[in-house]
Length: 188
Image 1 (cartoon, rainbow, N blue to C red):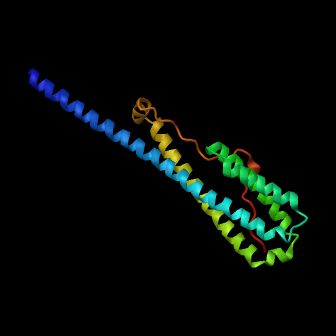
Image 2 (cartoon, rainbow, N blue to C red):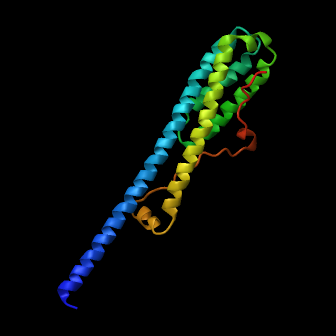
Image 3 (spheres, rainbow, N blue to C red):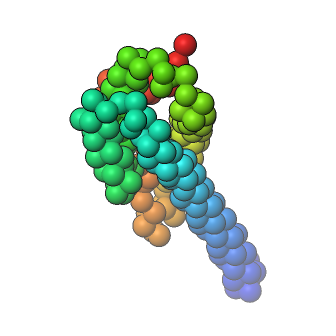
């Protein structure tokens, strides 16, 4: 083989490796951005939920004058959830809010007039819908995290991920089994 042919073959191999490297890098960036977008969707639904809760509290204040501690617990839990940042802190704050809302719904059972109030019923329906959307958004987020983390960990893309310092994303997990239950939002 001539030197020119060897240089041509080496150049061709270098070009193939470069295009492969670019392709893997771009797919990692795409997956990382999908994870960020999925988290943003959870954030949108959580904000919607956080915005609904004060309206719900305002609606029930007149009916539940003797349940001040319950309402204060919800307000505190909501404020913590609004201020939470990062996947783990957000999951813990939302679990606390779920517990406070569950206690609230138990107390509401003692107020039949409240359960018949149209504003309360409309807010309940909106909150139930939002809870479903949050669940779907969390599932989508965790699916995106799994795809991204798989790509980072699997050979040969893990080599590129290591070269460019791609970090694993954190799944949205509920650690306490009691926190896994969504607040009860149906009134029959």
